[in-house]
Length: 326
Ligand code: PEP
Ligand code: MG
Image 1 (cartoon, rainbow, N blue to C red):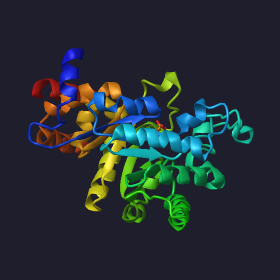
Image 2: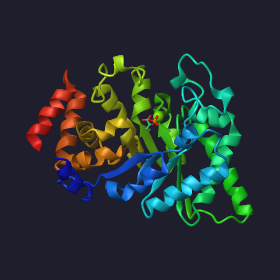
Image 3: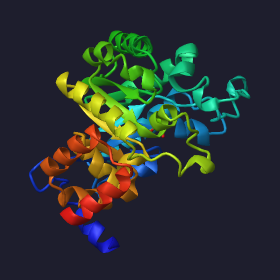
């Protein structure tokens, strides 16, 4: 089976009826980018920049950040890389930033990610400069984590635009294009998509955080791990609405997080109209194999019906369907 997946990795992820699914990987270290060509992935759909901060003994300055981003972009070659600005704070304590280690009762819902970046703008500014200067002549793709309301995206973007203007004025070699995206992982943002979509180049759904907030269930508590299912109608309906709205606005959506890395879940995601995934590298083979054996029109049709009148056990229904159809 491993050998079979290895062979499939280099083939395109296309369904039997010709729907192309883009399969990218999640990464966080320079080493991850180095293995990109072997993984068979179409690019890095989520580069978690906080890894560098979490593994460092001292705060990585602009130059150290820039060296990493350059290395990642070089290793990726022609394949796209989406850099996510730091998701630190909350329970991701940094030994050298003692004042951001708080004893929050609910760190996942606390002062983290973009919330912290917008309050500590020096950190965000140094990251913006590092990213801009790491991509001369290349497309730079940046996205912001944990956005709850559109103004947070606007503020983060304005901060970046300031650094772009500065770099231009200073006659730095600039990226050929800069794209900005928002991560949808806080449910409130889904209510404001009409305001957000016209302002973004792409949307990225973080299913790990999104499901923990939708179900109010700590993603790190093993006692809850089996309780709520990614294939539950609540999640699938929620995601379908987001995908439909984004498609109507012509904004590409990528599904990140663990959900899309599981073949059955990925099948359901294709069934509600998702066509871009970013998953863990080990899942590329299995997910591509699933996509290549799938009839997209048939699963879409099936999901349309199942979401109107959900079965008691969606997982079982979809497992049975998958067995009969591939
Ligand atoms: C997510 O929340 O699904 C996500 C992709 O980000 P992270 O897992 O880094 O929080
Ligand atoms: Mg997240």
